[in-house]
Amino acid sequence: MKFSKLVGTFEKLEKASSHKKMEEILGSFFKACSAAELVDCSYLLVGRVDAVTKSGDLGIAKKFVAQAIAEAHASGDLKKVNELQKKLGDLGLVALTLSTKKSSSLSLRDVIKDLS
Image 1 (tube, rainbow, N blue to C red):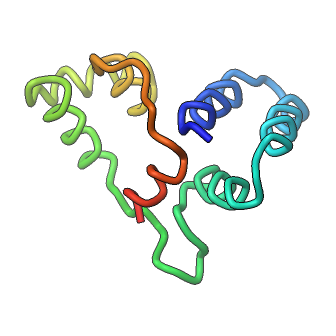
Image 2 (cartoon, one colour; image 1 turned 90 degrees about the horizontal axis):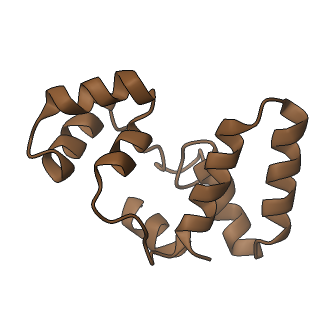
Image 3 (cartoon, rainbow, N blue to C red; image 1 turned 180 degrees about the horizontal axis):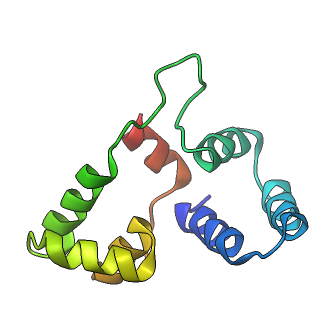
């Protein structure tokens, strides 16, 4: 599965206005997942890359993520990143807005391996 499919599901979840709608979105998405993908997606859904019994917590501070986005996409301009975060409300949306690459061929497994 392409990681972008999971990202698209997360975007739908952000726009959902009710718990029931979120359940419907996740249900449809999970039906399309293989067993291995279902495990990986479930962990990412709760902000982890592995089981709680392992050291899968990403443990990345928001300030560090903002600085990384600034270095990668805003020529080191942390002020610009912070302003966009206030406007957009989410560092993921900031990274997407500043990114020159708007699509990715990364697979879900590639992302999990890189984060682990």
